[in-house]
Length: 387
Ligand SMILES: *Cc1c(COP(=O)(O)O)cnc(C)c1O
Image 1 (cartoon, rainbow, N blue to C red):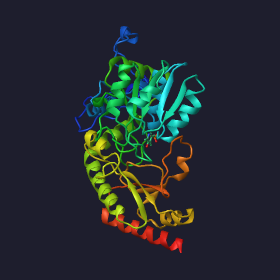
Image 2 (image 1 turned 120 degrees about the vertical axis):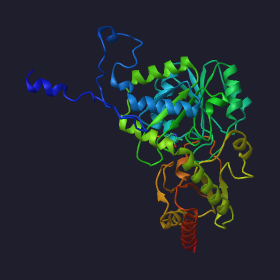
Image 3 (image 1 turned 45 degrees about the vertical axis):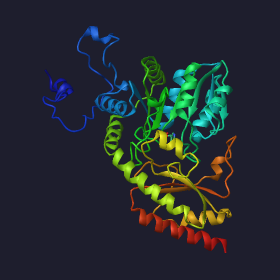
Image 4 (image 1 turned 180 degrees about the vertical axis):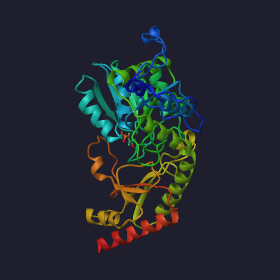
C-alpha cells in the first residue's frame, strides 16, 4: 500500500499496554467495532466516544464504590449534574420542592429553565420539619431537592427522614452533597434517590477541573439519568476524568486534614471579640450538631462566621488584609479562601437574620497557625476601619 494509506493506521493500537496505577487516558470520538453486527448491537459496551472511554469508566466505578451506587453519570460541571439530573426525571406539569438554601446557580436554573418548561418550583425553609415539608407536597410534586448543609448558611436537614417520607409518597429526593463530598456523607445510604456533587470541589481538590456526578442506587433511575446525558449531548474529557480520579485517591486525607484544621480555626474564632457567632455544624453546641454527628463521619473545610455589626468598608478592610486566604467563590481545593456572603442572601425567601455580616471561609492545607495569624491581621484591619 502507498505510504499515505499506511500512515493512516500506523501505530493506532499499541502492541502492549503496560499496567499503571491509573487507567489509560484513552481519547477518541470514533469507537471501532469488531464486526458489522456490533454496529447496531444495543448491548454493545460503547459505540461512540461521547459516552466515555477507559478513564471515564474508571472514574465512574470509583465514584460508585464511594457513593454505594449502582451507577454514576458524569457531567461537565457540578451545576450540570444538578440540572441534568433534574431534566432527566422531570416533565411539564410536575412540581419540585427546593430547599431555600440551595446553591444559587441551581436556584437560577429552577426559576428560569424549569419554570419555562412548565415545571412548578416552590422553595421551603431548610428549617422545615420533614413532616411539614411533606405536608407541602401535592399530587404534582415529583421531586424534593436538598442541600444539607447549605454552602453559605449551613442549615442541616434530617435527610433520612425526608427521604423516607418522600418515598412513601412516590416522590424522588435529590441531594447536592458537595459539602459531604461522597466520603463524609453517603446520601444513598440514607434513602436519597439521587446523590449529586460538584466534583470540582473536593474530589478534584486542586481548583482546576470542572465536573459533576449524579449517583443512584436504582437501575431504572440509572437508565433515566443515562438517557438524560445522551439526550443533552454532554461529554467530559478523558484528561479531566483522569484528573478527578487522581483527586479521589487523596480525598480522605485531604478531608481529614482540612476538616480538622477548619474545626480548630472555628473554635478559635468563637473566642475572638470581632466574631458574634461561628456557623459550623461539626462544632459541639452548634444548632445542627446532633444531626451532623448522627449522619456524618467527618467535616470538610467550609464554614461561616458572623462578624460584629460593621459598615461594608470594615468588612472589606478585613478581607483585603488577608494574605493567605484568597478572595474567591469556590472551595474544596488545597488553598484557603474567604468571601463575604450578604449580597448572596437577598434572593432567598427565608434567609436567616444574622447579627452582623456573614463571612465564609474555606480552610486549605496551609498550617492552621498561619491561617489564624492571617485572620488576626484581618481583624486588626477591621478594627482600624471602625475607628
Ligand atoms: C460549586 C458548587 C456547585 C457547582 O459546581 P460547578 O462544578 O462549579 O458547576 C454545585 N453545588 C454546590 C453546593 C457548589 O458549591
